[in-house]
Image (tube, rainbow, N blue to C red; front, side):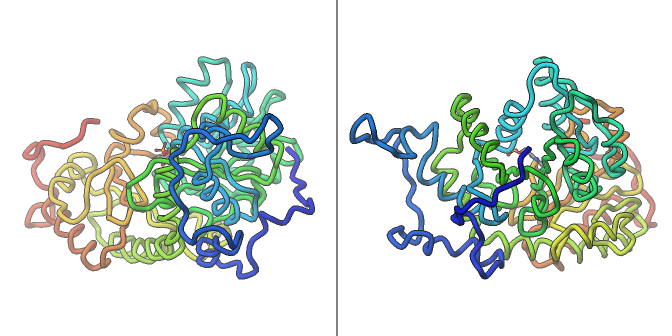
Length: 416
Ligand code: PLP
């Protein structure tokens, strides 16, 4: 994939401030005629003056002014041309795979990865003749070992959903780039504010904007950012051909959420660091994953790869595993059990039965995703209130002597 984007077109270059806070708020300067807040352009179609009309917007399945507004800001956050926005994160992944893979091609993926990505590759693209290999990408040498002559894409997620293990983007790109294989990074957990995959050597960054970027659980969306204009052109063609563009309403809601993304994600990170440290100090918490913890095994990589914070997501397991998790979930009051991350509220998920229910058990085990693991997306409430709720629910899951409460008393709200 060509990485040369040194054209004279400076429209996608960052503003000189370079701070994410200013980038997401500086839209009005791009075109002084533009309203400060974008309008929602609901029109499905656009009037042409004649058959020679040169206009970008002709029909809203191809592009739309509100969607273009979101694409411009997302691209600028990574010093890239406008991103390409989709109806969901999985729609973005589907378009990416359709753009770069055809029958007989091979893709290498990190094995610790969002369950929907596993389902899409194993159950949809396999059926179309695309070959795949999942590897433990925490060791870049495993990526090198999995590359075949027909490998056309390496797709990783870092931090991984839900075990938070990290993949070294710079080290992996040092393998993929000389081989001429595009490297795509799902950067949903950190967003461009806390991690810049393209600066680290990746060719493509991908987002479920449904999560932290929109941030209020109010709009589905996906986005892909790259500096390769040819790739972006082909991606837009796939989007037009398959009809997976984001709706103008959702683009507008996401654009509004984006204005506070830098503030929110930094506060999510601060709150998560406090919560993770307290949970780590409790002997009833037998496993905890958070890249900001002092004893996180990939601490050095986290410091090198992340920009001033490690995001809002923590995973942990209680002594007593699945049974204890069920009792704990029945007793939270402030935190909410949902299939989601990245919102202003604190959210809990049981990945084995929810987000990763379709992943084969051996892949879950290889990725370290145990049946008792809980995922916590730390919100913007006062961290003391979050901790009070978590610890009162942990207390309720154990008996008065500090032992695990007797099994079987409480029905579990989710199915493994
Ligand atoms: N990537 C990651 C890391 C996710 O967590 C998710 C959804 O949970 C997706 C992609 C898919 O995004 P969406 O739900 O917007 O389709």
